[in-house]
Image (cartoon, rainbow over all chains, first blue to last red):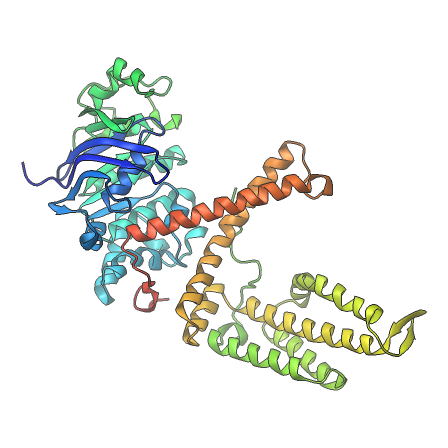
Length: 281
Length: 230
């Protein structure tokens, strides 16, 4: 296979206070993949994410982004390639208007003038927020702010989009809209989430991080239906949600997952067993 | 939930005062305040003229006078202090409304009160007629050090977020039978303000991380991009 977009090898990290969060993590993500990073609270997911763009520096092991090692001298390029969308959009959106905020990343990379405008508008169009370009971020709804936060990173034209809990605090409609947006993006995605139905819906592959190591890596359907694994790592499906009713093919087709819109006649779920994971977050 | 929409000090409008460039308004305000402060406090007629200028500007801007007066409440602690001066100052005493007060103190109090009031009212007029972001643009145009402008823009951006945080904390306190306004619960209020400070500090760190993740290296790119099409 080609050079992985993300290549994490034997990554270990201890915080300055001595608490060790990662004990030798191996993770490879290839171009075009959508991977869910699952795991209980305190498993080290956020710590791992902060290594991907060099905010934290590996204690041992290595992180490589499309062949470029994450080191001080490459930081700027690494941060262009790896776009992280943080959990709280208020942490990410800090400029006076949506336009300025989306321009912030590319402008830091030296993009100027017409090209900057093009990138800003293209990114906002991808998340359906183009008409709000001149509004201050704090006037937007939470779901809209989350989408703008995604755009701020898309404007940097990253090779991999890393999302930290993208569905948290969203109402079911915003959650679905974001899923539609993410599914339409032509970019590699690593999604940290506790929202297992969301992971199943969007990511064909899932990696389970627990106790600072990768304990499972396989198709999301297989991971979610492995009861022993799930129990051992404090992963629980929401009440009433059973991936088996959807079948193993779920979430694998690129952009062909109409099963969650009842009016298009669920193609995977058999009629009458339509589950609605959106209501459970 | 919900951060307040718009800034409470801004009164939307399209008058000539609203349309004047922000940096001009800032310069006029600073000049006016300096002039007021430098005026000897016994030139009573001149102060009347100053007041007429400020009130005139407010009227031209079509900002309701009551709207401005209500926001002048911020000045009250200052006025209370000014009102104390005649009682504690030295010098010849005089009688006002049956109270014996210091005569130089009385003049000093008048000076503090009138200059303070004119300054606050003029500042409120600027705030009422200029969007906060435009004030920042104006300051930048006046060559205010970029770092200070950045700090102010962050303050603007997060004021609502922190206020909403505080609002939720107070609601949560009330829900548990604690009335934050009552002095009996001030210790609890102080602790929650401490927690709010820590939370805001941590948010600052997260914002910084998010900025670094988007290639921030120490200077905001506003001056060169994203700002030109308003």
